[in-house]
Amino acid sequence: AQRVTQPEKLLSVFKGAPVELKCNYSYSGSPELFWYVQYSRQRLQLLLRHISRESIKGFTADLNKGETSFHLKKPFAQEEDSAMYYCALTKNTDKLIFGTGTRLQVFP
Amino acid sequence: DAGITQSPRHKVTETGTPVTLRCHQTENHRYMYWYRQDPGHGLRLIHYSYGVKDTDKGEVSDGYSVSRSKTEDFLLTLESATSSQTSVYFCAISGEGAYGYTFGSGTRLTVV
Image (cartoon, rainbow over all chains, first blue to last red; front, top):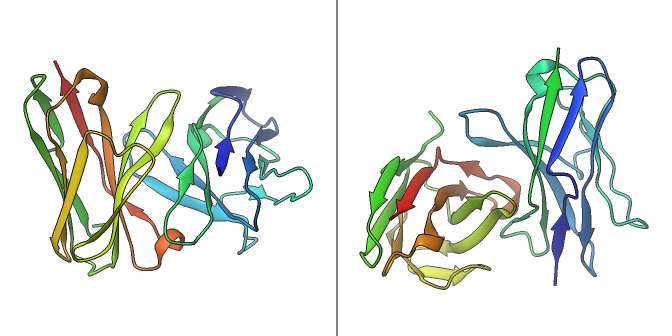
């Protein structure tokens, strides 16, 4: 069965430090992967998806099929990056399967 | 506005009572979804719909039913609420399946 694993419940860093939020998946085919973000008291919103290969708010993510990973990275964390981050996968393009989420705390 | 509203925003109900949550959209999107969000579990899909009267189960559908009699409304019903259904429920809509989710603001349900 397809599964998305986010091993860290909480990641705390200081402003200006690099950030890497881990996401691993299990799926036998060719998945499409996404990162969603939920800022405090706001709706979940799409941050980026691997097929577009965009950089949003300084975040990037590369799909590594060999390691079945899609880690989210940012070279210099900002306080406004503090939020809940969810990795998600689709296998048949009509629905998303989400991971358990990682809370990022960026301290000043 | 995001074109999607959930009601109620908060609800407290007693164990054993039926509860219906409503998701309403103004985007005329084909797909609608219900997820629940719980600490340590992330978001889990309950049910989804790919058109009027076309629905399918997600990974945690037991104890829940849905109905979609018109494009704009997707109702989630807890037949007999239990404490394990205390959660935050999110609705999402999409015109292109997994690629274009827009989430609602959520409904916080407490079953006592």
